[in-house]
Amino acid sequence: MKPPQPSRAHLWLFVPFLLMLSAFCLAPTYWVLVNSFVEEEGGFGFANYERILSSRFYLIALENSFWLSLYSSVLGLLIGFLATSSLRFVQGNVRHFVISFVNMSNNFAGVPLAFAFIIILGTNGAITLMLNKLGFLDNFDLYTRAGLTVVYTYFQIPLAILLLYPAFDALKEDWEEAAKLLGASTFTYWRKVVLPIMLPSLLGSFVLLLANALGAYATAFALTASNVNLVPIRIGALVAGDISLNPNLAAALSIVLVAQLLLVTVINQWLMRRRRYVSA
Image (cartoon, rainbow, N blue to C red; front, side):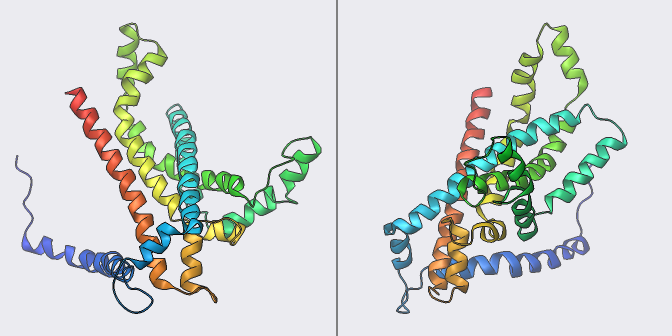
């Protein structure tokens, strides 16, 4: 049976979507790209990019943002993978409650999340004072890059669970039973069956987590202001700062940030093609 062919009436339904996409995605991206080449004197050139690549200050910001995003994405993906795998053994209303709670937690970010961590793990936070009395967390500082890694990992975990849940839900119990009948251990089943099947979902989720962390601004700014040199904070200072107002340089920084993410995406696609080629 042939699938139904879209008519002109159905195609008109895409017009509002295309308008929204153009107004809120394509047009701002085009504006940022064009203005990234506008120099302070008014001409067009690569002066903004040359300033970024020759400035140790902005290079450290790029480095800090990348490693912070990488660490939090890997940790969030690992914890989310373990949490999602355990949901397979939860049945009924409990699983629906957990997914609903995770979905709600995924929207808990920005300034409210930063305020919650200040109350819990800040210098005079409840858990910080309690653990200090027990001799733990003596050198932990929430307002540093290590503290930001903890906060970023926290808001990465719900997103990782939501991204991986459909992939785990597609696994069939018959596969594990068949593997055990053939003499495979649990470790062998996970290594040779589950992980190869879930590798595309894991890599795709990792890219999305990395993008989520690279663009995070409100949480980092609320916790550290300008104490930690990150690209989103630098962009915010260049756009809304009272001293160093330079929106064109901010646009160039945004393009460099997008280029980082595109590079990771290209590497991800190359690895997937290489895996498919080796498998074939």
